[in-house]
Length: 172
Image (cartoon, rainbow, N blue to C red):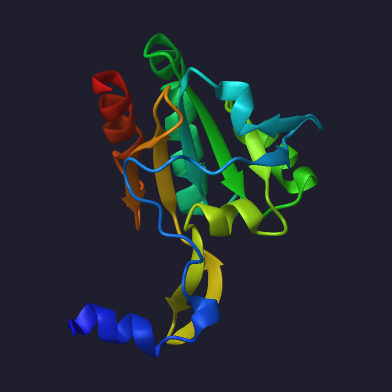
């Protein structure tokens, strides 16, 4: 058994991501509320490319930089025929405050029950200052127009990430 697999097997089952999507798999359907109060579904983007970026918490430094970067590239994503959605477990009010404070131009989705976070493998064990806890794992997925996962980025480093995702979307 590989050391990485041993480490995973040592974690309590509830700490492991419920799903680990891989490229080529059909993207799980979802229906969640977005900023502004409307509901949004995966089916709303049928036949289009879609980026889902999962971020831990609105208005934290890394999440703010990431959302601003995706907003900065919104027109380029649109030109590449790709929609972009940000998803966190924050309540809608926090999402809307975050959107307004930073003039974000991308829809922000609230998954307070962690259903989509778990389905997409973006919920699991994290560690900070020596303490382990469950939380959102910064993850991005590019879904092709065929509804299948085209690319997965796990443990995302924010700097330059939105540009990498755009390049992948353009080449799809």
